[in-house]
Image 1 (cartoon, rainbow over the protein chains, first blue to last red):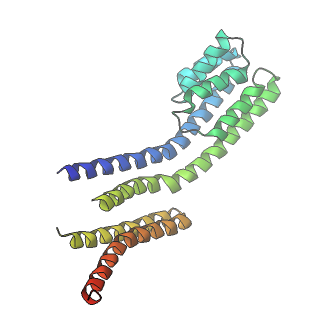
Image 2 (cartoon, one colour):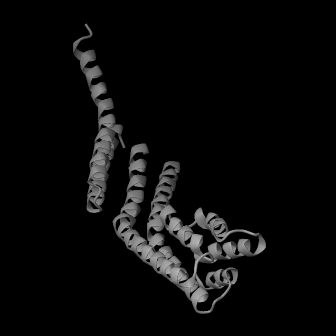
Image 3 (cartoon, chains in turn cyan, red):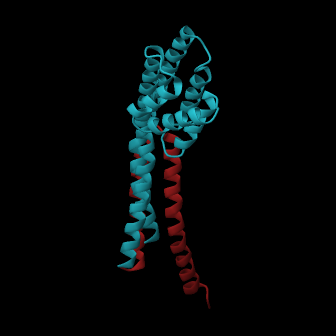
Length: 171
Length: 67
């Protein structure tokens, strides 16, 4: 009886581990889409409504889903409270969400790239920079989608099978 | 269940799972990992079998050579 309970626990643990890893692969394309959307909104806020940056970041944060909402809100707070550069403020935001979102370092690097020029260049340059960022995010998203197709199902299966294997070996 | 029957089922299970893992890994384009997984399954079975072979040898030596 105790043995059965133990094997069940091992099986559940391994399965959930597999699904957790698979979830990361599933979430990354979705979150990249959210970030792309956020960049588009930010571009509209800055170029057409001429909103000041902290306010624009906050508004975009309100309209986006996780992880963009928290990231942009934290960045806006830091930008308003302390006398920080845009890059440093956004880095604070990135640090806040980094541990519990599926985005990876290259994605954040693209975000930091746009933060470097925000507020420092003229309008034509900024438009080009926004366009370039959006294109980069779209290509990252395609890549992430490709990775998801290959890895999501694989990790789900592997989790269950590893659990079964452990149970058989230890039984 | 006697230990021998248990071992047979264990080996069957490991072989079965190794085959599935191999297929799953191969389908998602990770052939080198698939081969490693098969090798790992083989080694696991080997470790189980080696205990029984050792037992068998000891039986044989005790029957024929201990005079």
